[in-house]
Length: 263
Image (cartoon, rainbow, N blue to C red):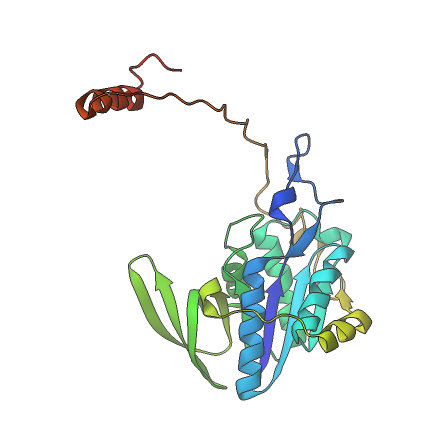
């Protein structure tokens, strides 16, 4: 069984800054981390590898510095890693990103399951996993809270919904987008860290994936970010009212309705 886990290096949420002129996140010089949701996808692949055998390949698309999250995956126990890095990939939206990762999966050739985290904490779109499935024309199972059964032909999962859950049986190959309730990611071992430090990261670019420039990066993105800005800070304002409950109810109603003269 060959598991592929797609991960992303994201800015530490406490350090996010925005380039007001270009309307993009400033990533240079900002501490970066493995997208937290992706750690659950890695752990799930590792656990099932232990149960039924196989191997785990972790893939990420980004600049050369994204190699750091792949080394973290190796330290957790991943067998192989692939970094999709090329200047032509810059500026990709979720569609172009999904298509590029799907091409990498096709190049690997023997993949049974692709796992992703529910979403990335920098974009929060939750579109990349489904996009990979669409590009591969594979079944997709989103919001997976439990993988109940897995063998060489099929997988049974519990999928969380707004009103409860669904139990779905799907043939392989398949794409899963997983929730953090799925498991508890393991800590890297000392041996894993030593292996990660020495590991050679495979890098694939535009030509390796047989992609045209019009299919990747900004050129291959049907959407554009027109503007991103930081919301102005909210003014701190507090008022204290004392009185009988009936009086306070009237005052509160006036505040909520904007009839108290406040801006």
